[in-house]
Image (cartoon, rainbow, N blue to C red; front, side, top):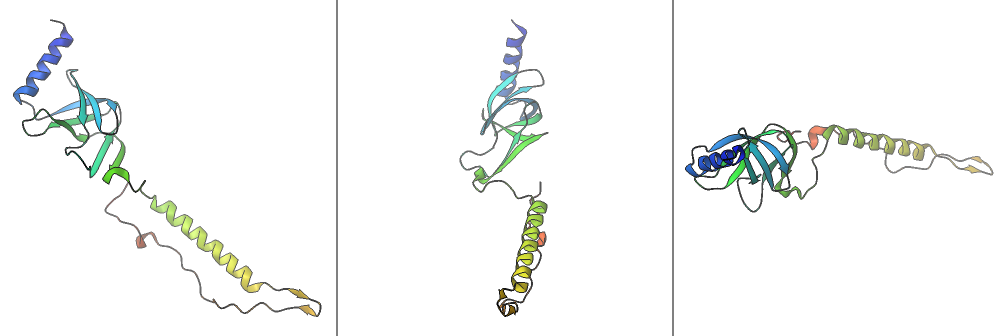
Amino acid sequence: MDSRIEQIVRGLGRLLRGVESSFICTVARVDSETVDVNDMNGTAYLNVRLSGTEGKRGFVIIPKVGSFVIVSRLSNSDSLFVSMVSEVDSVVIMGGENGGLIKIGALESKLNQLISEVNALKSDYTSHTHPTPSGASSAPTVPFTGTFSQFDKSDFENPKVTH
């Protein structure tokens, strides 16, 4: 028998006997819901699920092609899923419906830059005068005399989710 066929037969035998509930593989192909992997003997496992659950996926780690993963079996079934990854390409939380995570430092910088620009506009507004035929007029009365506060990332950061 061809050595490749022997590897496939051995791998299928191990799977069917339930000898291994988890094993190390390398990632050959990735799509949004499954991966193709090869175990350390070279046996290919196609369409291994990225999530242990079907339907709505809460937290899915998408591995990089070529990285190592641990593939686990669901109970004594033929269903396999990726239970751990060595290198992460991306992470999808609750289907990714809310877009990407915020880079908190960059957001804080942009918001504080906006505050500086608003303060500069306020300063220009409060010191603005109009020339008149009888000489310069005084600055208009400004109803807002307060200050704009700086943003602090701790006001809107969830430290339990980091990247």
